[in-house]
Length: 379
Image (tube, rainbow, N blue to C red; front, side):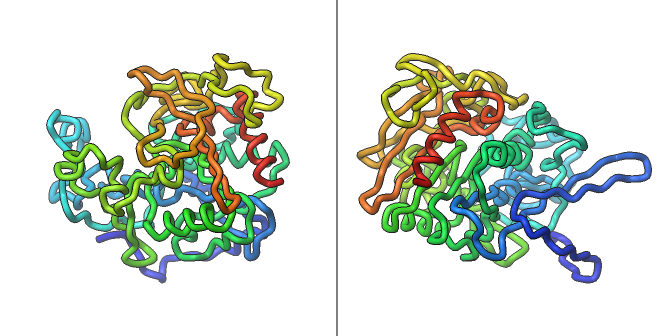
């Protein structure tokens, strides 16, 4: 019901020694190409930077088998969906709420992931095509390629490994979450918050719409997204997200910013607010200048601030510092780039945009700013 878990049809491969994001390639006799992402974590820490793959989000968007957290999120429908645009209320009913239940059936990790394919012979600086790949593994692969191009050594882990306690945070100086880390467990959140706020950890949040909903793991094969009932929590203007509604604390307490829907599905450059800050060193940027004009993101082209964006909220730390903000429409629809420090010596740098990593290989300022932050946090 939730995936095929028989051990008899499984094949085992020895992982490469080097940590990173790998792909298993397959091709049919007729030439059809398939690729499956493979997260290879280190046996022991080898670098000072740890990067988390957003594999919980990958699974939430994976509709293979007829369900995702967006297609029939509550349970598998009794009749298969033939034409989503005609069959699903999310497309046919303007008053429909996708998350109006108190219980959601599990989603299996044990499924193929067609949306995560990187086409054969793709180069790092090729545009990211398709509806889904722009905000999941193919986009994260671009960020990892940038780290290697710039000479930053890193270890790579899955979010599920972090939940299971298999990421030794105290062995690292910096943790990076990127692109679209939307779904987290409360254990993950409070573990990371304690590392940053109490033990001097440094966090780079190079994404948008992060930690927006809570997930639980009944077993190693499945997850349950606790979307909460939108008909209830959206009536309270002080609740900032599904995660906030469930956990009782907004993710802005850690990230410094939180997703809001203004500017959704648009993209634009950022405008500099505080050019004297060390983040902008060696960029030549002045207050009012724009940057992040180029992007590989084909679904929502237009700049490094986009797709979904985060902003400062009432739950943000009091010392959060605004560095730049996107020029997206809807009166403040752009992502807000912020930084803040903690009493323990920790720090958080957040960009508030899914499209940031789609610009990092092709926009000089986005690249330089990210390198400045990593270098500073590592020193």
